[in-house]
Length: 215
Image: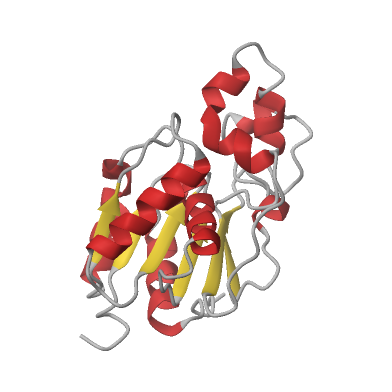
């Protein structure tokens, strides 16, 4: 195990999900020699700042100098919020998978439906109402986006810009200052089950860049 692999990785699930959804991704990262922890939170009920505080407390409880973080969808937004509000947590590398950092046309469309805001939960509504926090300069960010447009979002928001993953558009995942980006022909949900996505995630955690795609 090299120095990079000795830094534990915290996986964070998205909205309406539980840790077991990330089981395949966790297994693939562990096969690469990474130490992986799955963190659970109330993705629908909790406030964004509360989840960020709980994530910071969890990272501190691990008793290590630093952690890498991988967040899917809302999980990536919780991670960015935590890093902005809890500077004592050291995170050399963060991977956001399908996270709508730049807003969500699908979520905005759902909020126009009766009960749509309730379905989205507090965290997403709070994220959409604020200016996204800036990324730490000392944290290397890798952004993974899906470009296979199959999902509920295309029904809720027919004007969702192309390409998209069926829920989040490629443009919505962009983050100024990201170290590297990678796009894969996956839907929003299938991103976390994709072997190539897992391999690229591990490569970024180990080296700070995504592997070149062989065509």
